[in-house]
Image 1 (spheres, rainbow, N blue to C red):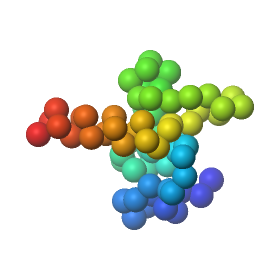
Image 2: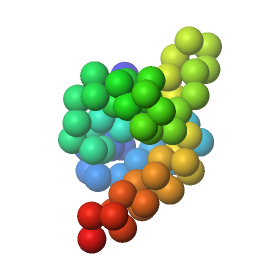
Image 3: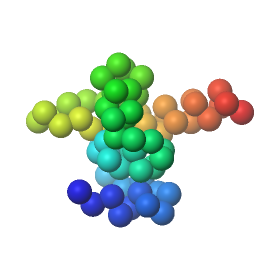
Image 4: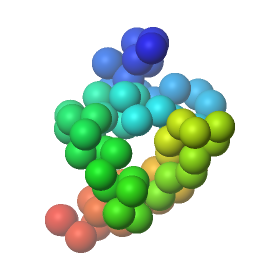
Length: 70
């Protein structure tokens, strides 16, 4: 899995993100990201059995959390 684009603090330029990419970006474990997705805490979809996070939904979700903690 190539998570090179997330190591510099930016997200890959595509519609769906992988769990490893989101975990690197948020500095959280993949296990935590999977748990959040399965509980509906983080927007996600299953594509071909793989969990993917729509980038647009992720950015909206992230912005909402930034405002709550500010």
